[in-house]
Image (tube, rainbow, N blue to C red; front, side):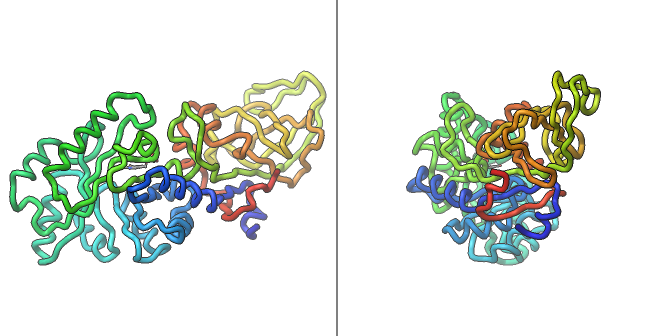
Amino acid sequence: MSAAALRAGAILTVDLDAVVANWRLLSKLAEGAECAAVVKADAYGLGAGRVGVALQAAGCRTFFVAHLEEGLELRKAIGFSSRVFVLNGTPAGTESEFLNSVLIPVVNTAGELAAWRDHAREKGRSMPVALQLDTGMSRLGLSHGDVAELAGEPMGLSGLSVELVMSHLACADAPAHPANGRQRRAFAKLRTVLPRRAASSLANSAGILLGPEFRFDLVRPGAALYGINPVPDGSNPFRQAVTLSTRVIQIREVPAGTSVGYGHARTVERQSRLATLSLGYADGWPRAANMSAFYKGQALLFAGRVSMDSIVVDATDCAKAPREGEFVSLMCREQTVDDVARAAGTIGYEILTRLGRRFARDYGRHAALAA
Ligand SMILES: *Cc1c(COP(=O)(O)O)cnc(C)c1O
C-alpha cells in the first residue's frame, strides 16, 4: 500500500488486470472489429493515465476522451503511438493544440466542419477528423440534412482526412428497443455517401452485445471496461474493477434505545456495537444509498443517515468485528457498483464518475484489503 493509502480515510483500489481482462473480452465479443477504449471523465473515475497505459500495453490502439484537456493529459501518460479522439468537439482557436498533440477532433456540427476546412486550407495540409452523425439520439452530430449537403458539395471535405465516421446509440441497454435497428439502418445509409476509406463505428459497450451487425469497423466501450453491467437486466459477464474500502475510525457500545446520527433517523432496539466509517457523501457515496459495509464476508448494515464525512454501521452481530483503524468495504464482490447505483436510483456510470477526490487510489491486485 502507498503512503497516501495508509493515511487515507478511504481507498479506491483499481484492479487494472480486471480492466484489461474486460477489454480482451470485449475485443473477443466484437471479433472482426477494432476494440477501442473510452477513457473520458478520467476513465470513469478510475484514472485515465493508468488505465490508458495498461490498455495500450494490452494492445489497445485507439482511445476516446470527451475534452481537449483530457486528451492532453492522456497524451502525457501514453505517448504518441495510439490514436486519441476527442468527442466533444473543438472550441474555436484550439485547432493547433489538437494538431500539436495529435488529437483527432470528432466534428459534430456543420460549423465545426467549416472551421476545420478553413484551418486546413490556411495551413496547406491535410487535417485528420472524425465525423459524428446523429442517427436518432438528438444529442450530438451532423443531421441528415448536413450529410446530404456535404455529399452534394464536392469540396465539402477538402483538406480533411476523415479517419472515422461514427454515431451513438440511444437505447443499446434495452436490446429489444426498436430504436436500435432504426439507428443502425440510418447509420448504414448515411455512411454510403461519406468517404469509403474512413472506418465506421456505432457501438458502445451495450451496442457490442446487440449483435455483429452493430459492430462495423470499430467499437467504443467504456462502462464494461470498468465492470459496469452494460445491460442492467442481464447477468454481468464483466469483472468488477474497483473496490472501495474505508477506515473504521471509532467503535462504540451503546445501550438499547440509543438514537444514531442526523435526525436520530435510527434508534437501536438492543445493546449495540456501532462502527463509524471515514467516508460520506462528500466522497461521492450517494446519501440515498442506505446499504451495508462488508468485513470478512459479514454485512454490517448502515445505522442512520449517511453524513458528509462518515457513515455509522451496526457491527453487533459480527462474529468477528472490525477494530478501530481497520478497513471495511463498501464496494466489493458482495456489493457491486451496479448494486450501489440501484439503491441510489441511478446508474453505475454516475456512481463511478462521482467518486471523490480526497481518498487514495491504489492500483494493482490488493483488492482484498478488508476481505
Ligand atoms: C461515453 C461514450 C461511449 C462509451 O459508452 P459506454 O456505454 O460507457 O460503453 C461511446 N461513445 C460515445 C460517443 C460516448 O459518448
